[in-house]
Image (cartoon, rainbow, N blue to C red; front, side):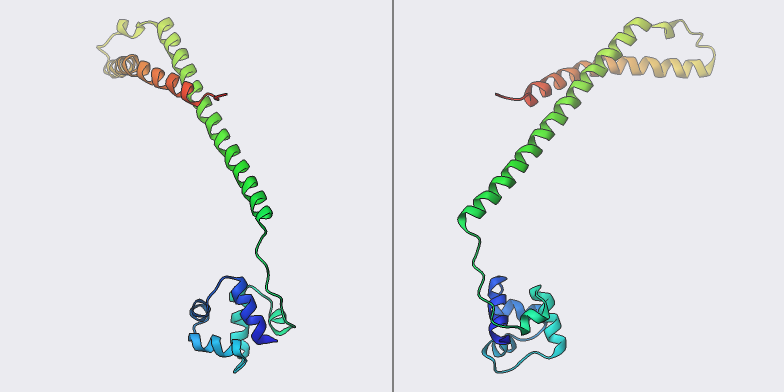
Length: 169
């Protein structure tokens, strides 16, 4: 019957009469009357009730519904195990990504040092009377000056990052 179905579905969804009443925009006594069989919801409220309880109207109007039992302990443990495995995989993926980022930074810095060392300071021989070359020369000199001072710090931090993200066995 409708009264029993409303009550059992509401309880299986973990809703109190007050919570269901708020969701349906009615007073708690209305829900109580429905569950006692003293009144029935009109068609609009029946559709709203169906939506709130995520249950078809036909099920609400159908035969008695046995109260659903909660998941067994074994099922919950299996679900938690799956979630834990997914979290572990996600953590391992993040660790690998960070490790490869640190390795890439080290490689880029080493290659940059090699390129700068082979090029030498050719910009020092430029004719700085030309304003465009002067600006470019100052820019190159500033870049090299900053790079030579900051790159070793970044390199050391990246080496530390690689050590911290390596897989511990």
